Amino acid sequence: MKVMVAVKRVVDYNVKVRVKADQSDVDIGNVKMSMNPFDEIAVEEAVRLKEAGKASEVIVVSLGVKQCEETLRTALAMGADRAIHVETNEQLQPLAVAKLLKAIAKQEQPQLFLLGKQAIDDDANQTAQMLAALLSAPQGTCVSKVNLSADEVIVTREIDGGQEQLGLKLPAVISVDLRLNEPRYIKLPNIMQAKKKPLEKKTVAELGVDICSHLIQIRVTEPKARAAGIKVADVAELVARLKTEAKVI
Ligand code: AMP
Image (cartoon, rainbow, N blue to C red):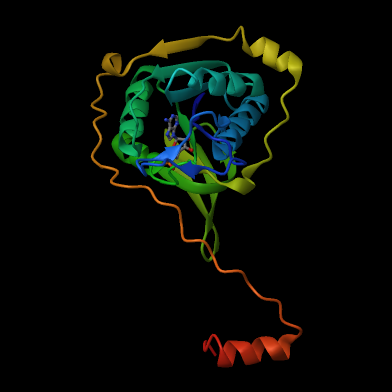
């Protein structure tokens, strides 16, 4: 069973991004970029499925600028078998990503898709849902447990009220949440091996997908600075202040 994992190159989660002087966007020149943390969890899960003998091949896909190759090499070092890079300098919105992934799925016929529940740059939380809709495939979002069998995957979802279990007929699309697993630490020999693994290049034109944007970004601004908090001596003072100053109780 082929498992396909979508990995996005994003600003590293430790970086505090700044808005460009002209407010046209955030400034990502010269900042550290990494694999989207949720996608690392998705790759880890796919590799574990392969190690458990439940998946035959793990294919990682990234869409974006040339440097996405580095992100794909990281996924290969984690244990993925091969990579596909759709190189483009265009800003891709979730619908364009979903359409491109669908076009690749048509060629590769994976039985299971693993995506992050959201990319930490746009925080859209849309791509997996759109991909499932385009493929008319069952979807499980915000998944914290995966139990894969030959024609079905049972997932546990993190929902507001607690947990929900769903059985999805394959092929299915899953978006993974934080508690699914802890991604492995990559060792040097794995990095060396990853350099020899296949990384195929594709273009948007080849895939025949219209990636034109349906949104216009008007302006990006910093959130308002928060006023400093205060420390109270005890609960009595807290209650008093909530009553008299904040007037919330
Ligand atoms: P989003 O809907 O933008 O929050 O992204 C959700 C997930 O879709 C990510 O965690 C990735 O698994 C996948 N994804 C989004 N954009 C890309 C991209 N450019 N290349 C590969 N995967 C992507």
